[in-house]
Image: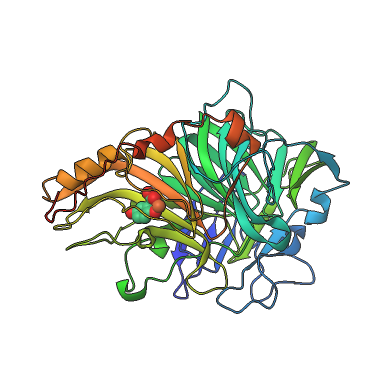
Length: 453
Ligand SMILES: O=C(O)Cc1cc(O)ccc1O
Ligand SMILES: [Fe+2]
């Protein structure tokens, strides 16, 4: 790949046909990339005839009239227009992939919950059949809310493609390596990285090293964006240059292929005679990207106290109500703890936002035991939680020298909407029935007399 950064943040990249891999840096850039020379029209979007006999097509990720800072669209130059990539739709069952609203009368979501890692079954599960929804929130029909999923994938999709009209997907691998062959290019993904697959983009998921397990946040609402840094200034947290979008890569393959579509929570299939990944060149700012979580630069307390976890926000999906996100993606990674005369782990609290957490690797400081890599916890809207007894006693009595929290990476999908458990989460997944007992032995220390106990 050759690429050159243009002053306006645009990237021009060229790639050879087919399997070419390569990435262009920058969050929200206006990229341009072509897999064949001169496939991209210059100076206009819709020439009377496109080079190579390509069709021009626009993929709009926001309303045409969205304000400039939010407006996202990509112009695609492709072998066939997308109308050839769908035929008649026939409903299919994807029983474990649920969509909000999915409020079940026989499932109690009120509570603090934790699950052991969901085992990857010895089955040929694909990206579609291996998706296991844990919670849903909001309502897909009004395009607000989210679902959290665990994916269990052992099998590549073969001549099979997928797109979601409902959502963008934030993918957080925990085990194994996946390849996302998308209309806009190829993204390889492994633990410690995340990817965003935008709404409407067609793709196929292949297993590079399996079996694979990870987490997905399915966002029905306004897209994930970088948070404002406020007084932090222009640097740290997630830096724009560390986000990578793929260069164009296309397939010119005439094979019978299945396209599966998720639309308003329903799944349909349609059959076509070729690969739909046929975009030879594209330009625009509506695209898939990946991000290496190791490039996240946390900012924290350097004298005393424990700040709100919003300081660790990687991406935020705004709600329109300033400061109240539909979803925040928050990262708890390696960092130094240096606060003086302070209880350093998370405090006990109740939160109007609901918190779903996953462990990518290592130990989480508030829950040194029981929250295993691959495990999940849910502390729903206004439900009290905080460090378990061991973490409390340890941190209350620790010598407060600088301490490195090392080899640790957990995350939180924090949403303004209450999260509802699926049948799978409540009855099939390995829920820890005794989870709330982690707080039971926090004894009463108060005896009415002054002084530190
Ligand atoms: O509950 C949790 O473990 C997540 C969390 C971490 C933190 O540092 C402060 C608040 C919070 O909800
Ligand atoms: Fe919390």
